[in-house]
Amino acid sequence: MRNIVLLTALLMMAVVLSLYDAGSGWCEDNASDAQLQNSDCVKCHPEIVHQNQQAGGKHKTEVGCLDCHEGGHPPKVPGEKIIPKCSKCHEGEEHFQLEGCLRCHQNPHTPLNIVFSGDNNMPACATCHPEQVDEIKSNPSAHAEVDCTFCHTKHGYIPSCLKCHEPHREGQQFKDCVSCHQVHQPLNVTYGDNVPNKDCGACHGDLEQELESGHTKHAKLKCVFCHKNKHGVRPACQDCHGVPHPPKMMKRFKKCVDCHVDPHNLVK
Ligand code: HEC
Ligand code: HEC
Ligand code: HEC
Ligand code: HEC
Ligand code: HEC
Ligand code: HEC
Ligand code: HEC
Ligand code: HEC
Ligand code: HEC
Ligand code: HEC
Ligand code: HEC
Ligand code: HEC
Image (cartoon, rainbow, N blue to C red):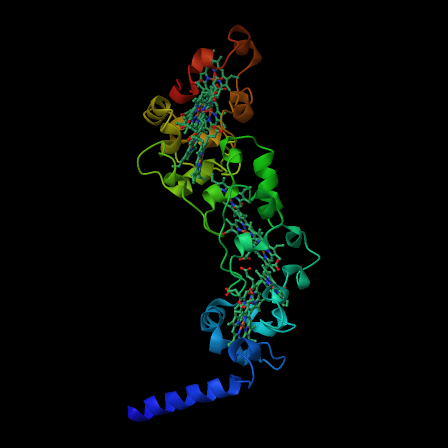
């Protein structure tokens, strides 16, 4: 134990001595020495070095402290002179034309620790996700009225619809919502052929009951088998059946439902 204390004291002295420059304030003056190495910074800026070690990403592996903070050190060189502009190294992409890089990349020593703030981030998102921005802008809805970060509060985070909305029926999950709604154009309800009848039945409960309690072959069909792809589509009987009866018979009854009554409650 004693040895450790002694060793630490010696080490500290060595550090102080190595920094000591006769005739002036020791710390700042020595730090401004052109001979400063990357390995020296930890002595006086341990927290930043620690952050950089933990989460520096390419600002740890591709560049060192002195690649960014070059040209001296306070007090010989004013502090602001050794703060680099991001454009010193990042140029030539749309993303790098944005204002205020540090608004999102709040700490240059941990550049992928991104924090969104404010409510006008859409132009920044557009530099990398132009499709989503186009989609939301060209399909007016309440979702287009809010900033992207209203929902994506952290980069890459995807919220569930249920965080903000009640489901149409009990037990409905996020994956069910997106089988009918595309979140960036929520008013265009389109779907594949897997939507269960009960999801339509959430709003058309009477028709669901009517259909499923029938005794014809229509009772076995899914809503979305007939109402394909887009909400509100009304198919014609002939789309699937053509006209299976002789013209003479059809002359007297103009409509299929004159005899078959109702596709959801078919009479045969
Ligand atoms: C990719 C460039 C870059 C690298 C690499 C970098 N820095 Fe910085 N550093 C900056 C920028 C930019 C600022 C100004 C941040 C601000 O204005 O909020 C800064 C600020 C600082 C500050 C003053 C602000 C404060 O928080 O006290 C210190 C000290 C500092 N850096 C030390 C270091 C050390 C030590 C390293 C190496 C582990 C390092 N930097 C690596 C870009 C960098
Ligand atoms: C002996 C201690 C010491 C060492 C070693 C040291 N610094 Fe500093 N550094 C300071 C002090 C003290 C300040 C504050 C000076 C001031 O504000 O006038 C400072 C300020 C800074 C600033 C802030 C400039 C500003 O005003 O925003 C940066 C950047 C910086 N150091 C980077 C480094 C880097 C990079 C290294 C390693 C290459 C390093 N320092 C090594 C003591 C040190
Ligand atoms: C001295 C050069 C230099 C400066 C100054 C600099 N960077 Fe970098 N940065 C790099 C290099 C090199 C890489 C790795 C290659 C690349 O992704 O372009 C990098 C990568 C990054 C990354 C990706 C990190 C990762 O791990 O994938 C971000 C984010 C970033 N920089 C943001 C910034 C921001 C914001 C600033 C200004 C505060 C800045 N950089 C200033 C050199 C620099
Ligand atoms: C609105 C927030 C925001 C602003 C403002 C912003 N960035 Fe980014 N930046 C991001 C996000 C989000 C990523 C993606 C990170 C990922 O891939 O995980 C990113 C990634 C990066 C990358 C790494 C990927 C690449 O394309 O090389 C660099 C470098 C970078 N930004 C530099 C900058 C610079 C320089 C500025 C200022 C001119 C800036 N950023 C402004 C949010 C922002
Ligand atoms: C510098 C480029 C860049 C910027 C700026 C950027 N992103 Fe990203 N984003 C990416 C990359 C790269 C990925 C990961 C690749 C992927 O999964 O498509 C990603 C992934 C995402 C994901 C997750 C995708 C998934 O399938 O899991 C969301 C959500 C996202 N970004 C939203 C945003 C929002 C919102 C903004 C603006 C506030 C933004 N991004 C800004 C590059 C960026
Ligand atoms: C109302 C909330 C909300 C808003 C506003 C919003 N998103 Fe999304 N975003 C989501 C949800 C939820 C998903 C997942 C959708 C899914 O899985 O089908 C998503 C998915 C994404 C993805 C992953 C790829 C994809 O298209 O599924 C990206 C990238 C993305 N959003 C970017 C953005 C951008 C950029 C904006 C702003 C123009 C934005 N989002 C606005 C909720 C939102
Ligand atoms: C972070 C909150 C949030 C999330 C997550 C979210 N929404 Fe919304 N949504 C809103 C707000 C706020 C409105 C406008 C007020 C309202 O109608 O409740 C809205 C409106 C809507 C509307 C009506 C649009 C209009 O213009 O009238 C639909 C449809 C919708 N959301 C579906 C969804 C679906 C589906 C998801 C998931 C894929 C989702 N929302 C995720 C907040 C959210
Ligand atoms: C079977 C398809 C389908 C599924 C699954 C579905 N929706 Fe809808 N949703 C619709 C239709 C169709 C409308 C439009 C009704 C209208 O025109 O009034 C709608 C309207 C909405 C609205 C607008 C306000 C309202 O209630 O009329 C919100 C919000 C919404 N859905 C959220 C959700 C959420 C959250 C989920 C998942 C829990 C979900 N939807 C699942 C088809 C669906
Ligand atoms: C959130 C409630 C909601 C859900 C879920 C819903 N609908 Fe509707 N649907 C409505 C409302 C409200 C109307 C009447 C207003 C209109 O025409 O948009 C309607 C109308 C219709 C119409 C008639 C359109 C016309 O021309 O009159 C059809 C067909 C239809 N829905 C089929 C379906 C099918 C199939 C599903 C399941 C994939 C479904 N609906 C899910 C609310 C819903
Ligand atoms: C065998 C095909 C078929 C099936 C299965 C089917 N429908 Fe229909 N549906 C039709 C046809 C055809 C019409 C148009 C009737 C007309 O125009 O007179 C229609 C009309 C509608 C309408 C418009 C209002 C009305 O009553 O005319 C709604 C709403 C509707 N269907 C919902 C549903 C729902 C919900 C389901 C599942 C529970 C479903 N349909 C299953 C063929 C079908
Ligand atoms: C999207 C396609 C589709 C539409 C639209 C459709 N049907 Fe059918 N219908 C079917 C299928 C599939 C069957 C079962 C055929 C089989 O199994 O042989 C069927 C069966 C029938 C049967 C025989 C029922 C039985 O139990 O034997 C009648 C009658 C019939 N449909 C009448 C109609 C009438 C009338 C309409 C319009 C109001 C209509 N269908 C609309 C697909 C459709
Ligand atoms: C005058 C009344 C009448 C009209 C109008 C009518 N049907 Fe029929 N349809 C019948 C009768 C009765 C049967 C039962 C024959 C049987 O079970 O052998 C039948 C049987 C069917 C069948 C089942 C055939 C099979 O092989 O099982 C289909 C499909 C059908 N009709 C479709 C239609 C369509 C589509 C229309 C409109 C273009 C239509 N029907 C108009 C009376 C009618």
